[in-house]
Picture 1 (tube, rainbow, N blue to C red):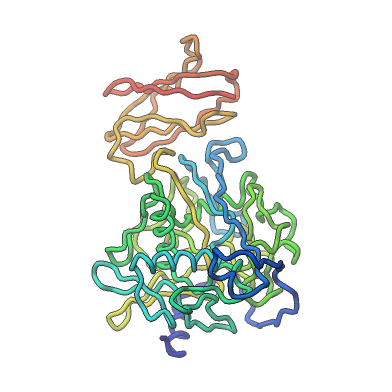
Picture 2: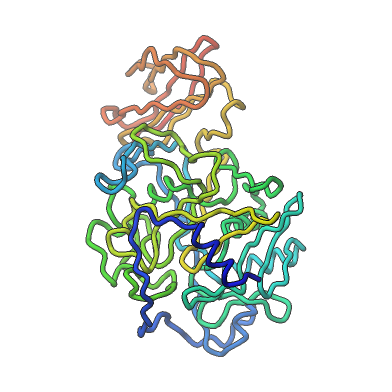
Length: 452
């Protein structure tokens, strides 16, 4: 499918390791990577009938990320002093779930077989698998004849279906392009009856961040929030320096490892493999670090460079920290009338699900008038009031206890058009039910929260 010269050309222009100095030597591993068990009775999975010795597949559950970070409502400091050019405050106003593991080869092959049955795929399935949008441009999803630094694609097409090569079921899928990750999210949403958040009609595909149920990639900010929860730790497991017991890095292995190989590297919330192994695609283009606070950030609208997080098996201990951006990868490159996409041996992805009822997202602004909510609810110490309105207003928020007594007032708040957030310290309130009202020129709007 690709000639060697074209592969080298595309990779050279497609990558920037501005934050890390990578090793380039290849080390032949001499360690066993996976655990095996006898499994002669499983005939439901087509892969399991190929051999009498089978790998136990991981169960990739979705883990909820609480909207309460170090006692504050969805607010954390992104970046690390002396590592990134600036640190800045990020506020989230919505709950989300994120997958425990990166998406494995087995999960990706299962998705391809579903899409194949739906008649959604193109390509010859030996060298590539693609999907076409409404304008007829074929986006490659998975580079099936890829060969890079000794690695090849671990999924193949045999006897009319996509199967995983022996021993690689629990490895993160590699050589998937960004479009291949977005397509996986759409198919996962479709299979569960949720909204597909990637529009495959424009070039490149359009992304929905907030306001709808469905699966998508995490933004760089969401990824770091989840990985460092809830104390801005350096590594997913804490501040203890990385060793080979915690993660795959520094060419301990010169390739991907199973997503469940490092139980000691688990994060505070139970997320696995968020440091080392292979890096992860995000949903946002590369942004410049700025000291300005950000609300539900999504990154720039116009670019073709996708940010990566987590870093890979070649990186050293310093740059697999959660705060590091592990460079970027081209979403596509337009050449000779075709869209060329990029999938490599050291990048994979995990998925995120946000909720239509959870928080006010940028996509919802303009559809709601003078709505006030607070997150989290129930409240422990802090909560954030979120106001979405269609015009600029000078507002007052009044808080009452269950007896109707006024206990606190936030006066003369100058809310702008769109989505606004204000943090409230509720630590002095006694446990119980509270009611609050938003007074604007258009009227009074009320809601309630529970103080724990």
